[in-house]
Amino acid sequence: MDCLVPGTQVTGVDAVPFWRRIRLADGREGWSAKKFLEPVGPVVDELAPPEAAIPPNAWLEVHIVDVGQGDGIWIRTYDDGVAGNGVFEGKNIVIDGGPDASPGEATLRDYLESRGHHGSVIDALVVSHPHDDHYPGALRIFRHFDVASYYDPGFPKGGVEYPAFLNEVKAEKTEGHPIELHIGRSNFGVPAWGKEVKVEFLYAWPGANDGLGSKANTVENNASIVMKVTYGRHSFLFMGDAEGKERDDAPDKPKYVEKILLAEHQPEALHATVLKLAHHGSETSSTLPFMQAVNPEIIVASSGRKKFGTVFLPDVSVLERYCQLNPAVRMYRTDKDDEAKYRTTKNDADGDHVVIRTNGRDIEVLAYADGVLLTTGETCQTVPP
Ligand SMILES: [Zn+2]
Image (cartoon, rainbow, N blue to C red; front, side, top):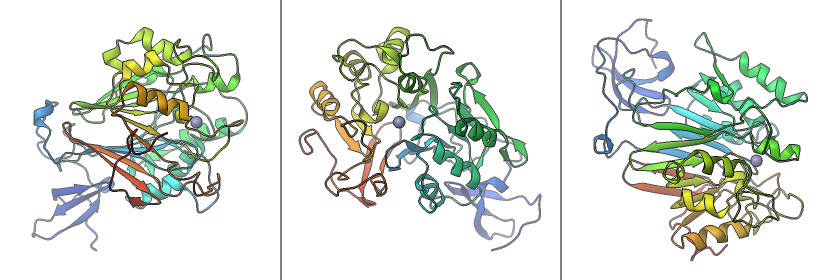
């Protein structure tokens, strides 16, 4: 452990999330938190590489963390050790923070802190929509990390809690700079998360509730930010809780967000290798025309043991639809074995994380049960829904 004088020039030689291995002029090497390093000197401006230019070890990782019933997702891009040239910058993006948890059970924060360090920079936090299983855990992210930018659909949620949450967001500072706020789709712009990554906001609350449902809960789900991330030949579609129908409707006629997405985008634009299922795999989403457009190879349900009326999510009927569409689809769930183990909302965040990584060509899934890496993937055959 050494304390460097501000202005000391070092050479970056390696990187892991939130840390950079550095070499001093005298040849000594060690690790520094990235937040204390600034790029200096000539930086080669690399252009967005075609797929072939993504190094084989340049993994982009998507961690769908088991936060119980809710969503909590961490995306980390590859860091090539050259800071500040806009490509392979090792960015950290969080989508949703999961539900509130009692003290000591801040699942997503703990997951991030065990892989980073207190005060690390989260480059962007995206809150898909203001529901209790998506945003409250994000407050713990703000309190333990420095969040540089914030994305929110801008839905005018009343009450006390969400406006109070937004006030804390707005007070956030990162290295002395106020947080960059992107509230409402027209303020999203194009995120600078590295030229090698294509980020598209395909949908967010349009500013009026027309056509988004008659129940307040449905409308709020249909305010969700829908985001697609493409890296090389693979892509991820994050749906938040966007819906496509009422539970009892037949699955062949899309309504709500799925109808809007199909009207505004060509099927190729909706296609994704990996689909984070909308609304925890609920029967209120995943209509047939939408599924056919996305045509995923891998689906992930982020859910837990919270009962909605008479059902837990994901709905088995939804998983069956994906298996019928593509019997080779691989499905993963953050509520793995929660039913068999009699889990409840108090203890369903038991480490069933799903980590997907791609170098733009290959794609690998590391699925965990109780925090232990599983050796075999799940298919429609091995795990009948
Ligand atoms: Zn939800």
